[in-house]
Length: 559
Ligand code: NOJ
Figure 1 (tube, rainbow, N blue to C red):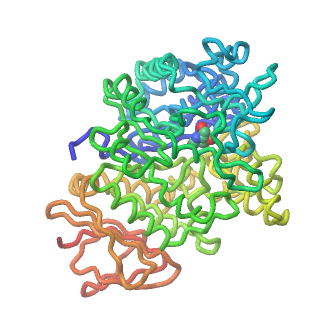
Figure 2 (cartoon, helix red, strand yellow; figure 1 turned 90 degrees about the horizontal axis):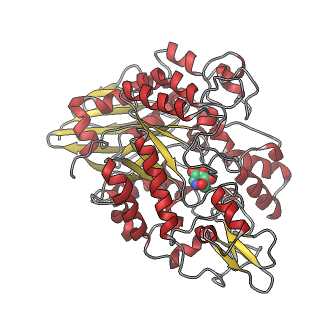
């Protein structure tokens, strides 16, 4: 593998709205991030991915952009942004922006012009089609529920396409003028000093050649079909992405990570191989395990150690000849990992530390989502109507339509709501967890007096300090080469609740072992020296290791 500057980096994802508020507005801001850069530097991360902080009506919390070249006034100004980039750089940290270009906001001037003149210049920036027999042009259902088509105001029979919310009209990448607009604003941010991008919903930018009348067999009683089904007839995305790379990413030697979902298996190397469109893409294999029998929240399964191992093995095997995957436990769309993978009675600091070990040493670029390093947990909101996440409302409706009781529907929606990951960052035990002096836009998780950064920074045994040590090990020059480039091999011990793997490079062999259960077990490790353990001591006798509940270790073993 040709070495790249970003191969050994660790990325930290910030959701600006919920990180730190310096104005008392109840909404986090860029200055809040700048103020806390020392905290992030201490943790040991190299890059920050900022979820969208552009002007937006916030129908989808900023993934609906109304101006690609500015900062939302709630988050600050372009000057604040420049200061953040400069201060981060002083600490050796690079900034990644979120590139959301499958769609924009219906409040973007392009769309407003298109609505005034749907057949005109800006109409061609979007997908606008005639309906059929007074109905939508086809039977696609949007990601957030309901038809993916919305009537163009003041017309009888014209509709625009929105794969996501109706306030997120899809941009038409077939139009070279639109593509050039995208490249121009991407380069605008490179000129301001960003080192790369996370790229949103990118597989959706290529549509089949005709949309009108392209119906697929319905997959629910509503007679519609999940819009992503269209990918089976969408070919040729590579032309767009090669152009994007050549005009924007390559000249800036950028680090880019794609939210690539639903691509054809054989195209993975085109995306992230040595000459791929992007540097990396996220590993969503566990998410697909979780949703295997459906996709709607009520059909999701609790992630067991065996499911996790199967997903990990699939990803690692698939990626070995290709490149580095972005390894994740959490992001702003997923529930907190402590709730997704640990049962109520097992949700301890020890188990949370084990989850860190589980993924940090796999082959890939680790992403840490804000608060994950503290072991932040899901929240509970009995009033679904007051949830901020748009997808929660549709999933609630789906649960109710399927005949679930109110209690069950509320439980399920709370389990998977995207609000879980978006509650304010817990800085300390003062009011509102020190996030804001005002009223937080989303209530703070009640557990903030117990789980917060100040307490954890002061406690050498905290989840936070364990993440620090774990990151430091990944960067230890003696092992970094093996951890970045070493071959991954899954190891199966007799006890099926142990997840283990090795990373081997030359004469260095590291063995990672996670006892994913609330009971003691043992395994054979041979001659080994201990590099990391979430317990204070390690029990190895005559090559036999005793593993206590949720114990996780990294060992250097004989190759
Ligand atoms: C993926 C983003 O992560 C999610 O938050 C958003 O709702 C959709 N893409 C649409 O932009």
